[in-house]
Length: 407
Length: 197
Image 1 (spheres, each protein chain N blue to C red):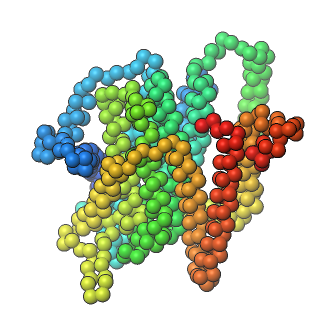
Image 2 (image 1 turned 90 degrees about the horizontal axis):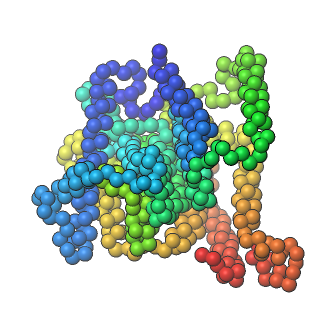
Image 3 (image 1 turned 45 degrees about the horizontal axis):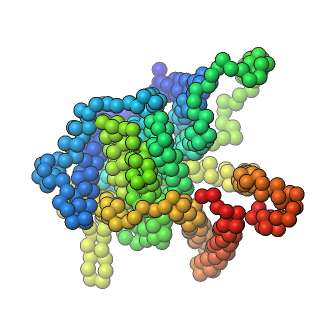
Protein backbone atom coordinates (compact mmCIF):
# COMPACT_ATOMS: atom_id res chain seq x y z
CA UNK A 1 0.00 0.00 0.00
CA UNK A 2 1.89 3.03 -1.24
CA UNK A 3 -0.69 5.72 -0.75
CA UNK A 4 -3.88 6.39 1.13
CA UNK A 5 -5.72 7.56 -1.94
CA UNK A 6 -8.66 5.22 -2.55
CA UNK A 7 -7.99 5.61 -6.27
CA UNK A 8 -4.70 3.73 -6.01
CA UNK A 9 -5.96 0.84 -3.88
CA UNK A 10 -6.45 -2.46 -5.60
CA UNK A 11 -5.78 -3.01 -9.29
CA UNK A 12 -5.12 -0.06 -11.53
CA UNK A 13 -6.75 0.32 -14.90
CA UNK A 14 -6.10 2.84 -17.66
CA UNK A 15 -8.75 5.21 -16.30
CA UNK A 16 -7.05 5.43 -12.91
CA UNK A 17 -3.74 6.27 -14.56
CA UNK A 18 -5.43 8.94 -16.69
CA UNK A 19 -7.01 10.50 -13.59
CA UNK A 20 -3.60 10.61 -11.91
CA UNK A 21 -2.04 12.17 -15.02
CA UNK A 22 -4.82 14.75 -15.12
CA UNK A 23 -4.15 15.56 -11.48
CA UNK A 24 -0.43 15.94 -12.16
CA UNK A 25 -1.07 18.40 -14.97
CA UNK A 26 -3.71 20.37 -13.06
CA UNK A 27 -1.64 20.62 -9.88
CA UNK A 28 1.47 21.64 -11.81
CA UNK A 29 -0.40 24.30 -13.77
CA UNK A 30 -2.10 25.64 -10.64
CA UNK A 31 1.31 25.83 -8.98
CA UNK A 32 2.91 27.71 -11.87
CA UNK A 33 0.02 30.11 -12.38
CA UNK A 34 -0.20 30.75 -8.64
CA UNK A 35 3.52 31.53 -8.57
CA UNK A 36 3.13 33.93 -11.46
CA UNK A 37 0.25 35.69 -9.76
CA UNK A 38 2.10 35.68 -6.43
CA UNK A 39 4.99 37.62 -7.93
CA UNK A 40 2.51 40.16 -9.29
CA UNK A 41 0.57 40.23 -6.00
CA UNK A 42 3.71 40.85 -3.98
CA UNK A 43 4.97 43.64 -6.22
CA UNK A 44 1.58 45.30 -6.39
CA UNK A 45 0.89 45.06 -2.64
CA UNK A 46 4.33 46.33 -1.67
CA UNK A 47 4.05 49.21 -4.09
CA UNK A 48 0.71 50.04 -2.53
CA UNK A 49 2.26 50.01 0.94
CA UNK A 50 5.13 52.19 -0.28
CA UNK A 51 2.80 54.64 -1.96
CA UNK A 52 3.79 53.92 -5.55
CA UNK A 53 2.03 52.27 -8.46
CA UNK A 54 4.05 49.14 -9.23
CA UNK A 55 3.83 47.12 -12.45
CA UNK A 56 1.03 48.45 -14.63
CA UNK A 57 2.15 48.17 -18.24
CA UNK A 58 1.92 44.51 -19.27
CA UNK A 59 -1.69 43.36 -19.37
CA UNK A 60 -4.53 44.65 -17.22
CA UNK A 61 -3.20 46.00 -13.89
CA UNK A 62 0.23 44.71 -14.88
CA UNK A 63 -0.94 41.11 -14.44
CA UNK A 64 1.28 39.78 -17.22
CA UNK A 65 4.44 41.47 -15.95
CA UNK A 66 5.80 38.20 -14.58
CA UNK A 67 5.20 36.49 -17.90
CA UNK A 68 7.09 39.26 -19.68
CA UNK A 69 9.98 39.03 -17.20
CA UNK A 70 10.05 35.26 -17.54
CA UNK A 71 10.15 35.45 -21.33
CA UNK A 72 12.99 37.94 -21.14
CA UNK A 73 14.97 35.74 -18.76
CA UNK A 74 14.36 32.72 -20.95
CA UNK A 75 16.00 34.38 -23.95
CA UNK A 76 18.88 35.96 -22.08
CA UNK A 77 22.40 34.70 -22.64
CA UNK A 78 23.20 31.78 -20.40
CA UNK A 79 26.36 32.75 -18.52
CA UNK A 80 28.49 30.29 -16.61
CA UNK A 81 31.37 31.83 -14.65
CA UNK A 82 34.78 30.51 -15.61
CA UNK A 83 35.78 29.55 -12.08
CA UNK A 84 32.54 27.74 -11.40
CA UNK A 85 32.03 24.03 -10.99
CA UNK A 86 30.01 23.56 -14.16
CA UNK A 87 28.03 20.44 -13.26
CA UNK A 88 27.03 21.57 -9.77
CA UNK A 89 26.36 25.09 -11.04
CA UNK A 90 23.81 23.70 -13.50
CA UNK A 91 22.36 21.23 -11.00
CA UNK A 92 21.72 23.66 -8.14
CA UNK A 93 18.70 25.57 -9.56
CA UNK A 94 16.82 22.31 -10.04
CA UNK A 95 17.60 21.19 -6.50
CA UNK A 96 15.84 24.26 -5.27
CA UNK A 97 13.00 24.27 -7.83
CA UNK A 98 11.93 20.62 -7.70
CA UNK A 99 11.37 20.34 -3.90
CA UNK A 100 9.31 23.53 -4.01
CA UNK A 101 6.91 21.87 -6.42
CA UNK A 102 6.89 18.46 -4.78
CA UNK A 103 5.56 19.83 -1.48
CA UNK A 104 2.61 21.23 -3.42
CA UNK A 105 1.70 17.64 -4.35
CA UNK A 106 0.78 16.55 -0.80
CA UNK A 107 -1.41 19.56 0.06
CA UNK A 108 -5.15 18.81 0.07
CA UNK A 109 -6.40 21.47 -2.34
CA UNK A 110 -10.08 20.78 -1.77
CA UNK A 111 -12.54 18.01 -1.16
CA UNK A 112 -15.55 17.38 0.98
CA UNK A 113 -14.62 16.86 4.62
CA UNK A 114 -18.18 17.10 6.00
CA UNK A 115 -19.59 14.11 7.83
CA UNK A 116 -17.61 10.90 7.33
CA UNK A 117 -16.49 11.62 3.80
CA UNK A 118 -12.88 12.35 4.81
CA UNK A 119 -12.29 14.52 1.79
CA UNK A 120 -13.04 11.81 -0.73
CA UNK A 121 -14.70 12.98 -3.92
CA UNK A 122 -15.91 11.10 -6.95
CA UNK A 123 -14.41 12.02 -10.31
CA UNK A 124 -15.33 10.14 -13.48
CA UNK A 125 -16.92 7.46 -11.31
CA UNK A 126 -13.74 6.95 -9.29
CA UNK A 127 -13.24 7.81 -5.65
CA UNK A 128 -10.20 9.95 -5.02
CA UNK A 129 -8.87 12.92 -3.09
CA UNK A 130 -8.31 16.46 -4.33
CA UNK A 131 -4.57 16.23 -3.89
CA UNK A 132 -1.93 14.80 -6.15
CA UNK A 133 -0.46 12.34 -3.66
CA UNK A 134 -1.34 11.24 -0.17
CA UNK A 135 1.71 9.32 0.97
CA UNK A 136 1.83 7.73 4.40
CA UNK A 137 4.77 9.88 5.41
CA UNK A 138 2.61 12.94 4.75
CA UNK A 139 4.01 15.87 6.65
CA UNK A 140 7.42 14.23 6.97
CA UNK A 141 7.75 14.69 3.21
CA UNK A 142 7.62 18.44 3.80
CA UNK A 143 10.52 18.22 6.25
CA UNK A 144 12.47 15.93 3.92
CA UNK A 145 11.99 18.23 0.95
CA UNK A 146 12.83 21.37 2.88
CA UNK A 147 16.08 19.71 3.88
CA UNK A 148 16.75 18.93 0.21
CA UNK A 149 16.08 22.57 -0.68
CA UNK A 150 19.08 23.49 1.48
CA UNK A 151 21.29 21.77 -1.10
CA UNK A 152 20.04 24.01 -3.87
CA UNK A 153 21.12 27.18 -2.10
CA UNK A 154 24.28 25.75 -0.58
CA UNK A 155 25.60 24.28 -3.82
CA UNK A 156 24.60 27.32 -5.86
CA UNK A 157 26.75 29.54 -3.67
CA UNK A 158 29.65 27.15 -3.61
CA UNK A 159 29.63 26.27 -7.31
CA UNK A 160 29.73 29.92 -8.33
CA UNK A 161 33.40 29.96 -7.41
CA UNK A 162 33.24 33.42 -5.91
CA UNK A 163 33.33 34.77 -2.36
CA UNK A 164 30.04 36.60 -1.89
CA UNK A 165 27.83 33.76 -3.09
CA UNK A 166 29.77 31.35 -0.86
CA UNK A 167 29.22 33.57 2.18
CA UNK A 168 25.55 33.88 1.29
CA UNK A 169 25.11 30.15 0.90
CA UNK A 170 26.93 29.31 4.13
CA UNK A 171 24.69 31.78 5.96
CA UNK A 172 21.61 30.39 4.29
CA UNK A 173 22.31 26.78 5.03
CA UNK A 174 23.19 27.52 8.67
CA UNK A 175 19.96 29.43 9.02
CA UNK A 176 17.80 26.81 7.32
CA UNK A 177 19.32 23.92 9.28
CA UNK A 178 18.88 25.82 12.58
CA UNK A 179 15.24 26.69 12.06
CA UNK A 180 14.31 23.25 10.79
CA UNK A 181 14.43 21.96 14.39
CA UNK A 182 11.87 24.49 15.63
CA UNK A 183 9.79 23.87 12.51
CA UNK A 184 9.73 20.13 13.11
CA UNK A 185 8.95 20.50 16.79
CA UNK A 186 5.93 22.72 16.17
CA UNK A 187 4.70 20.27 13.53
CA UNK A 188 5.10 17.62 16.23
CA UNK A 189 2.56 19.44 18.41
CA UNK A 190 0.02 19.22 15.57
CA UNK A 191 0.78 15.56 14.90
CA UNK A 192 0.32 14.79 18.58
CA UNK A 193 -3.27 16.02 18.49
CA UNK A 194 -4.12 14.84 14.98
CA UNK A 195 -2.70 11.37 15.63
CA UNK A 196 -1.74 10.88 11.99
CA UNK A 197 0.99 11.94 9.58
CA UNK A 198 -1.14 12.10 6.47
CA UNK A 199 -2.09 15.61 5.37
CA UNK A 200 -5.66 14.62 4.54
CA UNK A 201 -5.95 12.99 7.97
CA UNK A 202 -4.74 16.19 9.63
CA UNK A 203 -7.32 18.22 7.74
CA UNK A 204 -10.00 15.69 8.59
CA UNK A 205 -9.26 16.04 12.31
CA UNK A 206 -10.04 19.78 12.22
CA UNK A 207 -13.81 20.09 11.86
CA UNK A 208 -15.12 23.23 13.49
CA UNK A 209 -13.05 26.20 14.57
CA UNK A 210 -12.32 24.88 18.08
CA UNK A 211 -10.75 21.79 16.52
CA UNK A 212 -8.53 23.82 14.24
CA UNK A 213 -5.04 23.07 15.45
CA UNK A 214 -4.46 26.79 15.80
CA UNK A 215 -6.84 26.69 18.78
CA UNK A 216 -6.39 23.12 20.00
CA UNK A 217 -2.59 23.34 20.24
CA UNK A 218 -2.83 26.71 21.98
CA UNK A 219 -1.59 29.19 19.33
CA UNK A 220 2.10 28.98 20.38
CA UNK A 221 3.05 26.19 17.92
CA UNK A 222 1.45 28.25 15.15
CA UNK A 223 3.46 31.35 16.07
CA UNK A 224 6.67 29.32 16.21
CA UNK A 225 5.83 27.61 12.93
CA UNK A 226 5.14 30.94 11.22
CA UNK A 227 8.47 32.42 12.37
CA UNK A 228 10.46 29.27 11.59
CA UNK A 229 8.78 28.93 8.20
CA UNK A 230 9.66 32.52 7.33
CA UNK A 231 13.27 31.81 8.24
CA UNK A 232 13.18 28.56 6.28
CA UNK A 233 11.92 30.45 3.24
CA UNK A 234 14.69 33.06 3.62
CA UNK A 235 12.07 35.74 3.38
CA UNK A 236 12.23 39.11 5.13
CA UNK A 237 12.89 39.75 8.00
CA UNK A 238 15.14 36.68 7.75
CA UNK A 239 16.55 37.31 4.27
CA UNK A 240 20.20 37.42 5.32
CA UNK A 241 20.86 35.07 2.43
CA UNK A 242 20.64 37.91 -0.03
CA UNK A 243 21.44 40.86 2.20
CA UNK A 244 22.33 43.12 -0.70
CA UNK A 245 24.25 45.66 1.39
CA UNK A 246 26.65 42.95 2.55
CA UNK A 247 26.65 40.21 -0.04
CA UNK A 248 25.86 41.86 -3.40
CA UNK A 249 23.07 39.41 -4.18
CA UNK A 250 23.78 36.44 -1.95
CA UNK A 251 23.94 32.89 -3.24
CA UNK A 252 22.52 33.74 -6.65
CA UNK A 253 24.88 36.60 -7.51
CA UNK A 254 26.51 34.72 -10.38
CA UNK A 255 23.27 33.37 -11.79
CA UNK A 256 21.48 34.92 -14.71
CA UNK A 257 18.91 34.07 -17.37
CA UNK A 258 16.76 30.96 -16.92
CA UNK A 259 18.82 29.58 -14.03
CA UNK A 260 18.16 32.73 -12.03
CA UNK A 261 14.51 32.48 -13.01
CA UNK A 262 14.37 28.98 -11.52
CA UNK A 263 15.66 30.26 -8.17
CA UNK A 264 13.21 33.11 -8.33
CA UNK A 265 10.32 30.78 -9.11
CA UNK A 266 11.38 28.41 -6.35
CA UNK A 267 11.41 31.21 -3.82
CA UNK A 268 7.88 32.31 -4.63
CA UNK A 269 6.63 28.75 -5.03
CA UNK A 270 8.04 28.00 -1.57
CA UNK A 271 6.15 30.95 -0.14
CA UNK A 272 2.93 29.57 -1.57
CA UNK A 273 3.56 26.00 -0.46
CA UNK A 274 4.58 27.08 3.03
CA UNK A 275 1.41 29.17 3.36
CA UNK A 276 -0.54 26.16 2.14
CA UNK A 277 1.17 24.00 4.78
CA UNK A 278 0.24 26.53 7.48
CA UNK A 279 -3.37 26.46 6.31
CA UNK A 280 -3.34 22.66 6.24
CA UNK A 281 -1.74 22.18 9.64
CA UNK A 282 -3.37 24.93 11.68
CA UNK A 283 -6.40 26.29 9.84
CA UNK A 284 -8.25 23.22 8.67
CA UNK A 285 -7.21 23.33 5.00
CA UNK A 286 -10.31 23.06 2.83
CA UNK A 287 -12.62 22.75 5.84
CA UNK A 288 -15.14 25.61 5.82
CA UNK A 289 -15.28 28.19 8.60
CA UNK A 290 -18.42 27.33 10.52
CA UNK A 291 -20.07 29.90 12.75
CA UNK A 292 -22.30 28.95 15.65
CA UNK A 293 -22.64 31.82 18.12
CA UNK A 294 -25.97 32.11 19.89
CA UNK A 295 -28.69 32.29 17.26
CA UNK A 296 -26.26 32.96 14.42
CA UNK A 297 -25.45 29.76 12.55
CA UNK A 298 -23.58 29.25 9.30
CA UNK A 299 -22.10 26.01 8.05
CA UNK A 300 -19.66 27.74 5.74
CA UNK A 301 -21.44 26.61 2.57
CA UNK A 302 -20.62 28.99 -0.27
CA UNK A 303 -23.17 27.30 -2.59
CA UNK A 304 -20.46 26.29 -5.02
CA UNK A 305 -21.00 22.55 -4.71
CA UNK A 306 -17.79 20.56 -5.16
CA UNK A 307 -15.65 23.72 -5.36
CA UNK A 308 -16.61 24.75 -1.81
CA UNK A 309 -13.54 23.28 -0.12
CA UNK A 310 -11.16 24.56 -2.78
CA UNK A 311 -12.49 28.12 -2.48
CA UNK A 312 -12.14 28.00 1.32
CA UNK A 313 -8.60 26.69 0.94
CA UNK A 314 -7.57 29.46 -1.42
CA UNK A 315 -9.24 32.14 0.71
CA UNK A 316 -7.21 31.03 3.73
CA UNK A 317 -4.11 30.73 1.58
CA UNK A 318 -4.53 34.30 0.38
CA UNK A 319 -4.51 35.57 3.97
CA UNK A 320 -1.08 34.05 4.58
CA UNK A 321 0.31 35.16 1.26
CA UNK A 322 -0.70 38.66 2.26
CA UNK A 323 0.89 38.22 5.68
CA UNK A 324 4.21 37.28 4.06
CA UNK A 325 4.12 40.32 1.79
CA UNK A 326 3.18 42.44 4.79
CA UNK A 327 6.20 41.09 6.71
CA UNK A 328 8.44 42.05 3.82
CA UNK A 329 7.09 45.56 3.58
CA UNK A 330 7.19 46.36 7.28
CA UNK A 331 9.87 44.43 9.17
CA UNK A 332 13.57 45.37 9.12
CA UNK A 333 16.12 42.60 8.61
CA UNK A 334 17.55 40.88 11.69
CA UNK A 335 21.24 40.92 12.51
CA UNK A 336 22.89 37.53 12.15
CA UNK A 337 23.46 36.95 15.89
CA UNK A 338 19.87 38.00 16.61
CA UNK A 339 18.72 35.43 14.09
CA UNK A 340 20.72 32.64 15.70
CA UNK A 341 19.74 33.66 19.25
CA UNK A 342 16.07 33.74 18.32
CA UNK A 343 16.29 30.32 16.73
CA UNK A 344 18.38 28.42 19.24
CA UNK A 345 17.67 30.12 22.54
CA UNK A 346 14.02 30.98 22.17
CA UNK A 347 12.17 29.06 19.47
CA UNK A 348 13.66 25.59 19.96
CA UNK A 349 13.30 25.54 23.78
CA UNK A 350 9.84 27.09 23.59
CA UNK A 351 8.58 24.61 21.02
CA UNK A 352 10.11 21.71 22.93
CA UNK A 353 8.54 22.83 26.23
CA UNK A 354 5.14 23.32 24.62
CA UNK A 355 5.36 19.94 22.93
CA UNK A 356 6.11 18.25 26.27
CA UNK A 357 3.24 20.10 27.95
CA UNK A 358 0.81 18.98 25.25
CA UNK A 359 2.10 15.43 25.55
CA UNK A 360 1.57 15.55 29.31
CA UNK A 361 -2.01 16.74 28.84
CA UNK A 362 -2.62 14.02 26.27
CA UNK A 363 -1.25 11.37 28.64
CA UNK A 364 -3.29 12.82 31.51
CA UNK A 365 -6.40 12.59 29.36
CA UNK A 366 -5.74 8.93 28.56
CA UNK A 367 -4.99 8.05 32.19
CA UNK A 368 -7.80 10.13 33.68
CA UNK A 369 -5.53 12.44 35.68
CA UNK A 370 -6.71 15.77 37.03
CA UNK A 371 -6.10 18.40 34.37
CA UNK A 372 -5.29 21.14 36.85
CA UNK A 373 -2.62 19.00 38.55
CA UNK A 374 -1.09 18.02 35.19
CA UNK A 375 -1.04 21.66 34.13
CA UNK A 376 0.48 22.84 37.41
CA UNK A 377 3.22 20.18 37.40
CA UNK A 378 3.95 20.81 33.73
CA UNK A 379 4.22 24.56 34.19
CA UNK A 380 6.47 24.11 37.24
CA UNK A 381 8.82 21.85 35.27
CA UNK A 382 8.85 24.35 32.40
CA UNK A 383 9.53 27.17 34.87
CA UNK A 384 12.54 25.32 36.30
CA UNK A 385 13.78 24.61 32.77
CA UNK A 386 13.42 28.25 31.75
CA UNK A 387 15.27 29.38 34.89
CA UNK A 388 18.13 26.94 34.22
CA UNK A 389 18.38 27.92 30.57
CA UNK A 390 18.36 31.65 31.24
CA UNK A 391 20.98 31.19 33.98
CA UNK A 392 23.17 29.25 31.54
CA UNK A 393 22.74 31.90 28.85
CA UNK A 394 23.59 34.67 31.32
CA UNK A 395 26.74 32.87 32.51
CA UNK A 396 27.92 32.18 28.96
CA UNK A 397 27.29 35.79 27.91
CA UNK A 398 29.27 37.07 30.91
CA UNK A 399 32.17 34.72 30.23
CA UNK A 400 32.25 35.57 26.60
CA UNK A 401 32.44 39.25 27.40
CA UNK A 402 35.25 38.66 29.89
CA UNK A 403 37.26 36.56 27.45
CA UNK A 404 36.79 39.17 24.78
CA UNK A 405 34.18 38.02 22.29
CA UNK A 406 35.57 37.38 18.84
CA UNK A 407 32.27 37.74 17.06
CA UNK B 1 8.83 -8.75 -14.28
CA UNK B 2 7.01 -6.99 -11.54
CA UNK B 3 7.03 -3.29 -10.72
CA UNK B 4 8.82 -4.06 -7.47
CA UNK B 5 11.69 -5.62 -9.41
CA UNK B 6 12.05 -2.56 -11.65
CA UNK B 7 12.06 -0.26 -8.61
CA UNK B 8 14.63 -2.45 -6.91
CA UNK B 9 16.95 -2.45 -9.93
CA UNK B 10 16.73 1.33 -10.33
CA UNK B 11 17.29 1.99 -6.61
CA UNK B 12 20.13 -0.52 -6.41
CA UNK B 13 21.77 1.10 -9.43
CA UNK B 14 21.47 4.48 -7.66
CA UNK B 15 23.02 3.07 -4.50
CA UNK B 16 25.92 1.42 -6.32
CA UNK B 17 26.55 4.38 -8.61
CA UNK B 18 26.65 6.68 -5.60
CA UNK B 19 28.91 4.35 -3.65
CA UNK B 20 31.38 4.08 -6.55
CA UNK B 21 31.16 7.84 -7.00
CA UNK B 22 32.15 8.50 -3.39
CA UNK B 23 35.36 6.58 -4.01
CA UNK B 24 36.36 7.54 -7.52
CA UNK B 25 35.40 11.22 -7.68
CA UNK B 26 38.53 13.15 -6.77
CA UNK B 27 36.66 16.25 -5.69
CA UNK B 28 35.34 16.16 -2.10
CA UNK B 29 32.10 18.00 -2.90
CA UNK B 30 31.30 15.64 -5.77
CA UNK B 31 32.04 12.69 -3.50
CA UNK B 32 29.63 14.08 -0.89
CA UNK B 33 26.95 14.52 -3.57
CA UNK B 34 27.47 10.90 -4.65
CA UNK B 35 26.84 9.93 -1.03
CA UNK B 36 23.52 11.77 -1.20
CA UNK B 37 22.63 9.69 -4.27
CA UNK B 38 23.35 6.51 -2.31
CA UNK B 39 21.23 7.67 0.63
CA UNK B 40 18.35 8.45 -1.71
CA UNK B 41 18.59 5.02 -3.26
CA UNK B 42 18.38 3.46 0.19
CA UNK B 43 15.34 5.63 0.96
CA UNK B 44 13.65 4.35 -2.21
CA UNK B 45 14.40 0.78 -1.15
CA UNK B 46 12.82 1.52 2.23
CA UNK B 47 9.66 2.78 0.52
CA UNK B 48 9.58 -0.35 -1.63
CA UNK B 49 9.63 -2.36 1.60
CA UNK B 50 6.74 -0.24 2.94
CA UNK B 51 8.98 1.28 5.61
CA UNK B 52 7.71 4.79 4.89
CA UNK B 53 8.80 6.29 8.17
CA UNK B 54 12.35 5.00 7.82
CA UNK B 55 12.51 6.37 4.28
CA UNK B 56 11.45 9.84 5.44
CA UNK B 57 13.87 9.79 8.35
CA UNK B 58 16.64 8.57 6.06
CA UNK B 59 16.20 11.64 3.88
CA UNK B 60 15.64 14.10 6.74
CA UNK B 61 18.52 12.96 8.92
CA UNK B 62 21.15 11.59 6.57
CA UNK B 63 20.65 13.59 3.39
CA UNK B 64 19.25 16.66 5.10
CA UNK B 65 21.52 17.01 8.11
CA UNK B 66 24.59 14.82 8.03
CA UNK B 67 25.75 15.34 4.45
CA UNK B 68 24.89 19.05 4.74
CA UNK B 69 27.27 19.07 7.70
CA UNK B 70 29.93 17.30 5.59
CA UNK B 71 29.55 19.91 2.86
CA UNK B 72 29.67 22.65 5.44
CA UNK B 73 32.98 21.43 6.79
CA UNK B 74 34.39 20.93 3.29
CA UNK B 75 33.44 24.47 2.29
CA UNK B 76 34.53 26.16 5.51
CA UNK B 77 37.88 24.40 5.78
CA UNK B 78 38.64 25.27 2.17
CA UNK B 79 39.55 21.71 1.19
CA UNK B 80 37.14 21.95 -1.70
CA UNK B 81 39.65 21.37 -4.48
CA UNK B 82 40.45 18.26 -6.43
CA UNK B 83 42.89 15.83 -4.90
CA UNK B 84 46.12 15.24 -6.72
CA UNK B 85 46.45 11.49 -6.79
CA UNK B 86 50.10 11.63 -7.88
CA UNK B 87 51.23 12.75 -4.44
CA UNK B 88 51.48 9.92 -1.92
CA UNK B 89 52.14 11.06 1.65
CA UNK B 90 52.52 7.57 3.16
CA UNK B 91 54.25 5.18 0.78
CA UNK B 92 52.92 1.86 2.16
CA UNK B 93 49.36 3.18 2.24
CA UNK B 94 48.20 1.99 -1.17
CA UNK B 95 49.41 -1.61 -1.10
CA UNK B 96 48.10 -1.88 2.45
CA UNK B 97 44.72 -0.48 1.40
CA UNK B 98 44.54 -2.97 -1.45
CA UNK B 99 45.23 -5.90 0.90
CA UNK B 100 42.67 -4.72 3.48
CA UNK B 101 40.08 -4.09 0.76
CA UNK B 102 40.53 -7.51 -0.82
CA UNK B 103 40.46 -9.13 2.62
CA UNK B 104 37.23 -7.40 3.62
CA UNK B 105 35.59 -8.32 0.32
CA UNK B 106 36.64 -11.94 0.74
CA UNK B 107 35.28 -12.01 4.28
CA UNK B 108 31.93 -10.54 3.27
CA UNK B 109 31.60 -12.96 0.35
CA UNK B 110 32.52 -15.87 2.61
CA UNK B 111 30.00 -14.75 5.22
CA UNK B 112 27.27 -14.47 2.59
CA UNK B 113 28.04 -17.91 1.15
CA UNK B 114 28.30 -19.54 4.58
CA UNK B 115 25.26 -17.91 6.14
CA UNK B 116 22.99 -18.03 3.12
CA UNK B 117 20.86 -20.77 4.62
CA UNK B 118 20.77 -19.13 8.05
CA UNK B 119 18.92 -16.04 6.82
CA UNK B 120 15.35 -16.26 8.01
CA UNK B 121 12.70 -15.81 5.41
CA UNK B 122 9.82 -16.17 7.86
CA UNK B 123 8.83 -13.23 10.01
CA UNK B 124 11.50 -12.58 12.59
CA UNK B 125 12.04 -9.86 15.13
CA UNK B 126 11.06 -7.07 12.74
CA UNK B 127 7.60 -5.80 11.98
CA UNK B 128 5.40 -8.61 10.75
CA UNK B 129 3.32 -6.34 8.58
CA UNK B 130 4.69 -2.87 7.91
CA UNK B 131 1.32 -1.43 7.02
CA UNK B 132 -1.81 -2.87 8.51
CA UNK B 133 -4.77 -2.37 6.18
CA UNK B 134 -7.07 0.36 7.42
CA UNK B 135 -4.50 2.03 9.64
CA UNK B 136 -2.24 4.28 7.57
CA UNK B 137 -0.05 5.15 10.56
CA UNK B 138 0.52 1.59 11.70
CA UNK B 139 4.10 1.75 10.40
CA UNK B 140 5.19 4.59 12.67
CA UNK B 141 3.04 3.27 15.54
CA UNK B 142 4.77 -0.11 15.51
CA UNK B 143 8.24 1.41 15.31
CA UNK B 144 7.46 3.77 18.20
CA UNK B 145 6.06 0.99 20.36
CA UNK B 146 9.10 -1.18 19.71
CA UNK B 147 11.59 1.63 20.27
CA UNK B 148 10.05 3.03 23.44
CA UNK B 149 9.22 -0.27 25.11
CA UNK B 150 11.61 -3.04 24.07
CA UNK B 151 14.60 -0.83 23.37
CA UNK B 152 13.97 2.09 25.69
CA UNK B 153 17.16 1.49 27.68
CA UNK B 154 19.37 1.50 24.59
CA UNK B 155 17.49 4.55 23.35
CA UNK B 156 18.22 6.48 26.54
CA UNK B 157 21.86 5.38 26.47
CA UNK B 158 22.24 6.70 22.93
CA UNK B 159 20.79 10.04 23.98
CA UNK B 160 23.26 10.23 26.88
CA UNK B 161 26.06 9.43 24.44
CA UNK B 162 24.94 12.25 22.15
CA UNK B 163 24.84 14.75 25.03
CA UNK B 164 28.33 13.69 26.09
CA UNK B 165 29.54 14.15 22.52
CA UNK B 166 28.02 17.63 22.30
CA UNK B 167 29.53 18.73 25.63
CA UNK B 168 32.91 17.32 24.63
CA UNK B 169 32.77 19.15 21.30
CA UNK B 170 32.01 22.45 23.02
CA UNK B 171 34.87 21.89 25.44
CA UNK B 172 37.31 20.96 22.68
CA UNK B 173 36.37 23.92 20.52
CA UNK B 174 37.22 26.42 23.23
CA UNK B 175 40.44 28.32 22.70
CA UNK B 176 43.39 26.19 23.85
CA UNK B 177 45.29 28.96 25.70
CA UNK B 178 42.42 29.33 28.14
CA UNK B 179 42.22 25.60 28.66
CA UNK B 180 45.95 25.44 29.26
CA UNK B 181 45.61 28.12 31.91
CA UNK B 182 43.04 26.00 33.74
CA UNK B 183 45.17 22.88 33.64
CA UNK B 184 48.34 24.50 34.92
CA UNK B 185 46.45 26.47 37.56
CA UNK B 186 48.36 29.69 36.97
CA UNK B 187 47.47 33.09 38.42
CA UNK B 188 44.81 33.72 35.77
CA UNK B 189 43.03 30.47 36.53
CA UNK B 190 40.40 31.89 38.86
CA UNK B 191 39.26 34.21 36.13
CA UNK B 192 39.24 31.62 33.37
CA UNK B 193 38.10 28.48 35.15
CA UNK B 194 34.67 29.98 35.61
CA UNK B 195 34.52 30.32 31.87
CA UNK B 196 35.26 26.69 31.25
CA UNK B 197 32.81 25.48 33.79
